[in-house]
Length: 406
Ligand code: ADP
Image (cartoon, rainbow, N blue to C red; front, side, top):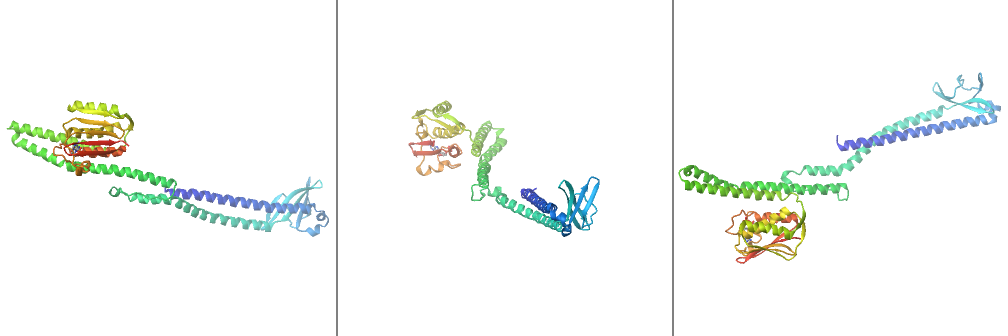
């Protein structure tokens, strides 16, 4: 059942019950006050001595004295014949009989209350009509309130339905207010931002993989053909083909791993306190051991940073890997107030290429053996962590990449 219908029903029930209650109590109140008036009238008539003395003048009042062994009818203009207390009906006429004590004697006093009963009947009919109208009004009011309160949600729903994988960049607009609906709109839009980013990352991954794997796969197939044709008879060709297949496969594996990393960089990162000096000492030791290169660590100022150690390591690995690949001299890693810099004394990067190197698949150096993905991975992760990567470089002098830790 729709919320609008539910709300309408609940509100109708509430309004309708209220109408019935009001009608019921109004009727009860009027009935009580009418009958009370009649009773008071009868009491006054009995008390007025004149009644007793000049009964003839008050011919419209019934008076019966209750005796121990029956009744003594003093005056019965209505010819009722039955004198119990209450309201008696006869041929559409109504009579009110009440019991009263007066001067130690018990009387039944009565009166024709037909006009009062007709008024009460009219009131009953009117109130019933009112309840009927109240029912219709309750439903209309309930429906209007439900529709009005849910209209912002309906608008959101319509806008959400228009968002498909083809136009994930659409966002919903909500009311210009500070209520729950505005908060909901803000949260949904934030969620859409995340979904869009993740979706785009996946899309890019798929297109990058299909584009970038074409060449190495073609090359592997070429070598396989070569193996089939000449490999069996010529061990030299077999050796060469197998080596090439192995290298190309390894490169493909690295490429896929890097692309996956890019797609994954949208995932939430777990942060912890990282002592940067200790972190760098550990990391550089690994690199020294792996490549036997001279990598010095200069610590001007150490900090403990709340960051993702795993992702910071990925950034540093890219920068150090590049310094190792594109220089032969000593590499210096500097930790200071600004952040962490990796400085090499290698071939350097021309000024006009320094922006390009952060783009995907961009390789400047002729000696590059990578896929041109390292720096774009590093930059994306850095941005996610709130850092910036700057570069200072001049050809022939060397380069300095800095992770600015803001
Ligand atoms: P890859 O190293 O895999 O080619 P990167 O994205 O890491 O990809 O780098 C992009 C390009 O930037 C490299 O191909 C290289 O030309 C240039 N580059 C990166 N780091 C350095 C460096 N330290 N010295 C000289 N050139 C560099």
